Length: 528
Figure 1 (cartoon, rainbow, N blue to C red):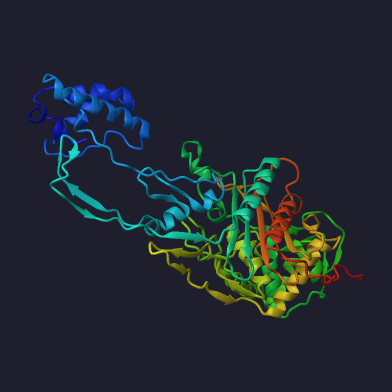
Figure 2 (figure 1 turned 120 degrees about the vertical axis):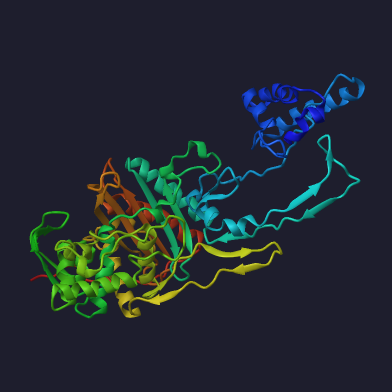
């Protein structure tokens, strides 16, 4: 409303604001006195007050009909005053998300002011919004005077943003993780699908999520993108980086023999594997296939003449894989995780970091590690934006992602064959991720979990990471579930099936055929 149009000088009555408020209050569902206060402000020169926003067209139609009725009566009845002449409407937009919860964590939402409040909406708000226009015109009785003319500065439309997300694969990933989180009575879970060659993210699903069309039902904990914002200890899926260092430094081969006792004393701790066992006689490949913590400690201990030297070598590889750094997505609220410099590693961290405890990551970082191996040892910075289309309709591709060689192509191919043993060999921990007709490389993880509420260890982070086809990789899938409280909590048991379901769907959707080649069948054990 324009408060100057409700004064005695304008209406020739003293109670214009009160009469207007009596008519408006029941329509707007507001207190009558609040409306009076707005129509009679302390600043007598104020020309603009907001009575209500984000109203339906039906509400404005009611007010407009009342205005017309009063205006018509005013012309025939000299005692009638059109007290609503100074009430005006300004069209506003409402952001609609036709796919509801699908990819909500990526897209984000728009707040009441029309600005991006999270996700891509917030990150690229300036490009999406464009620039407002302005119009100045003369009006009388709440209506524009057509003979006076107007000054207008046209609005500049925003750009369209094209994402790398495949809607069908996103839907499959979201369904799969939501079902497993519910089945496991877990706190949350995430699935990431990435093109191993381009770094493009094909899906990034979180559960529980939210519907950006109805933020009143969303909780603050679920409105972000947990796959990028949660920092957690990855557990055994991180062992692939330790094995990459061991192979690249040429201190062992997949056939190198490793004697794995039931307990291993290192520093101030006694280390064990996830199950009690007699002394295992494993190859290095078997250490990865059976996910032996002790075997991993023994293998990475060979990276230097001293433990301190071995720590520095392992740290350098973790950093090259992108651990402890932002992914390059520049996503709002993204965590870079926690990776302390090696000279700050505690006595226990020297031996737990090789098997994924004592270091924190986000889900995208974990997926990127496996994409790096799948891509022949070259890390391609993950991307969510394929390009933009400006107001002129011209498409501008996003800049080429940064590429970094982490390990040699030989090491990457060797790791891929070793990861096949995790899934393909009966001794492996990832047999539930097998996909008929395809060679699958993968790794399970079951890590002690730090409860973000207490800062103490409570429950587990269950995960599975891998790519397919193993010998000609095209797609990486990573799944993690936090604090499963019902049924199994082992990564191979609850994330392996999610990986299989999503990977199968992605391979079919992208029409990726099986390679037809036979797996390497590297030895897992040996006879002493």
